[in-house]
Length: 384
Image (tube, rainbow, N blue to C red; front, side, top):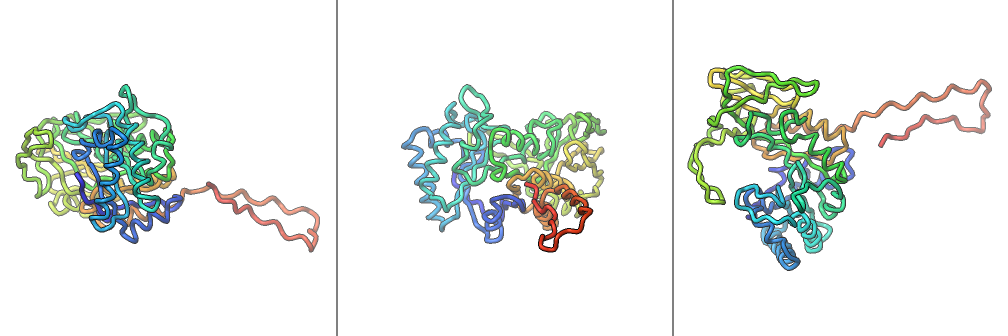
């Protein structure tokens, strides 16, 4: 249930104008580390661990003891994707899970102290409260004890999807969530922008389509070809995808390929795309999806479609974060993105939003100004 997660493997890349800039830069430059508690499967115990004041106090103390035992991590990442939702099929679930999470964050802060970092990873579509209603207000108070709130915006499509699609669309288009919809929801719900971190996936996902040709769908003013009908056959991913039998935490058995590639680096290594991610290879054609602003590869002969990230897509995501004053981004796994893409992301996040130039100064008076009065200065007020 406790897994180590170093920020060099899950880096937080800050925007230049964020008020949390100094601490975020320390996370990257000084390689501060948080260990992660929970996860998609590990979080199935959280409901019980936070169900009472006594349980919350004991759990917080165990986290602090583990932090010290592991050598003194700089904080903790609490990864509970979906409080109040049985995401694995065997989670313990209570309608009060979200309320208990808020109370636990207060308890955890009291135990860790103000100097340690607390990050919380949650679902991009919101927290589910009592009566299965999504909490749409009060996020500033809810996450008052957290330094960062990480939205899992890297899991919009997969083998469970009805259609093919991108893992992290910029706009929702044919997906249930996206970069923009997740950020807009939490900001409307009151979460301070400086705390909000969005996830960029490093992995690539593959599908088998039903047709050997691509259909076009219109979403508003955008066209899209990344959403296609798919078959139940999951193609082989990269070399590590061995298709072995697997038993999950709920005891359900499965077998077959995952269809996952390590990312652009692995796709290029296997000869499926150019090293820059801008040209297809190995029988795959390169496509850019206008609506989601993500690339994908398609090989008609095998009906295989691969959705991934390249420089163009990660720059678009980083620009969105910068333009909207958000805290930064999280990379799901550094092994999948080439170093050049990290430089692209960092460069984009280092830019401040473009401000309109100040108006020109008024024309000088017709009379000669008095020598004892200083000349007027231009308005240097910066836009917030």
